[in-house]
Image (cartoon, rainbow, N blue to C red; front, side, top):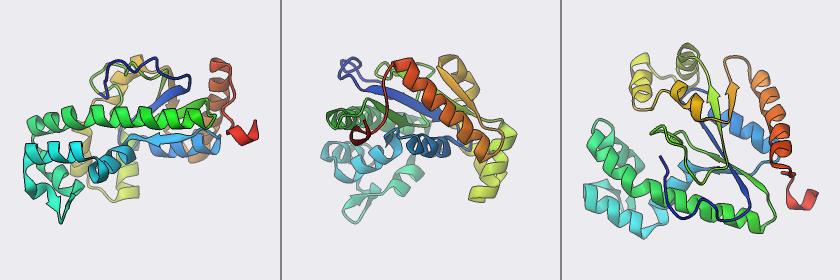
Length: 221
């Protein structure tokens, strides 16, 4: 869903997407990849930074939804979220504005990592391939998969969310099972954290072989 044109072949750093539905354990998998020396870019963090610092994004959101989206002088993620939560048309307008900007900023950060000597970067986003199309600027896509029952139980235990809240969140995301056909690698996360960690470390080694390079930080080469 983070589609832009004209950038897919820029740079030599390998850009590997990491996605998964809410409660799948995507963020935990990302943490394990960092443990394996893969630098990480979170698209959620990039989007948050743009809301705070990018004047073009700021003005675009104010034009869409008005000054009530402000908390003081800054855009409020909570107010924006509440505005689009049950309004698909408003959400589509917001995504059309902010997603290309997020993708461009992520690519800028990838270029910075390449200048530092990195050869791999992991990019985490729940909404990769959300429209069931792969982002052209990714060199690979990892899907973290878990059954619906496991995801619901985790969200109840870890975030104290009600089943109704969880189902509302899930229905707003494309069924992760439909993304399996687009993924190059699938991590099955129905078990323990240690089981997930073993899978991630195995895949990290496979990625080094697959791309024929080392992902160690520059100072460790």
